[in-house]
Image (cartoon, rainbow over all chains, first blue to last red; front, side, top):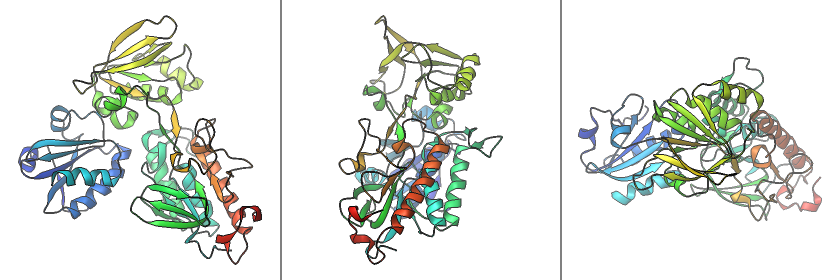
Amino acid sequence: MASENVKTFTDSNFDEETKQGVVLVDFWAEWCGPCRRIAPIVEQLATEYAGRATIGKMNVDENPNVPTSRFHVRGIPTLVVLKNGQLVDTIVGLVPREDIVSALERHL
Amino acid sequence: MSGSHADREVVIIGSGPAGLTAALYAARANLKPLLIEGLEAGGQLMLTTMVENWPGFRDGIMGPDLMGEMRAQAERFGTEVVQGNVTSVDLRHRPFTISLDDGRKVTTAALIVATGASARWLDIGSDRKLSGRGVSTCATCDGYFFRGKPIAVVGGGDSAMEEAVYLTKFASKVTVVHRRDTLRASKIMQDKAFANPKIDFIWDSEVIDVSDLEKGEVTGIVLRHLKTGEIRHLAVDGVFIAIGHTPNTALFRGQIDLDPNGYIVTRGGTRTNIPGVFAAGDVQDHVYRQAVTAAGSGCMAAIDAERYLEGLPAADAASVQPSATA
């Protein structure tokens, strides 16, 4: 994707990349219309929060384990916020940008 | 003819077929429309797969692709599209004022409301709480998560049948739960659903609860038979709700006349009770609700708005009184 601040999470790098600090993960897929709406917001936030939080995307098609087995995602877009590897917030569905910002701010 | 005190001649709220067609026509009439997309940008077609009843595409077209084309076409003729959500409107003073969630305010001489309708929930509490945990209103978004699992589809209309058929690609079994003993869906969609060996029907039944809130995931639904009162439990991993839509009119309540179900009342084309405010698409249509009828009424709204603007005193569109409008 466009911004280099946007991490790409995978089943194999997930633990390593999320174990420290505040992390926002956007679970998405190519075929999900509403995900395309969230994507530019997540990309903007990745730039705005660079250095303060790790923000990235995880494709549920390509990563069968973390999204569905660990986080029990049953619908996308779903965003999760982790702090030092622990799940602290879950946002389901299409939400305004401010909802994502306040979920991040709560844990920074 | 431009309102000297207004930022814009026409603002359009909504980016489904109605809003984008209104934008296309308004742009081609050189009104330089501003279109505010809203949260569910692209509207309901963004949640569909193949659209087979949009004229001109004999093999169908994917809903999101169709909306991408419509948007590009509206922009090609000068529509300015802004992302963002409208938080309030002031239609009591002229020019009208539209406030956006990023704090921006826009004033306009004419307004076209094309905010559409959003999926209805069951109104039983547990369905919303388990949203994203097995309850969904979007089969194309969430069907993927139910590969090899039994699921239920609630509803008896075209969208319910479309979702049921689509979901058989993933689910081991799809049970359609409907309140009546016949479907409301069109004949062609009924035939598709009845012919599908993976689809079962439970008639005359309503969903009174979704389990299991404590586990935080869907394990089944509780059904009540509407004729016998019998209660039964159906074990499913997912529930897809397709029981219709609610018009997105909360923003306009108290200003634009709404019918008892919340739809905007239009008369003489797309006019609302407020001169200069027009409505198009599902926000004012609970009868046809098709992409093509929405687009048609979007075109009408743009033409109605253009005529309205032509009738305003040239010097000062902003201060015109309702009684002075054509």
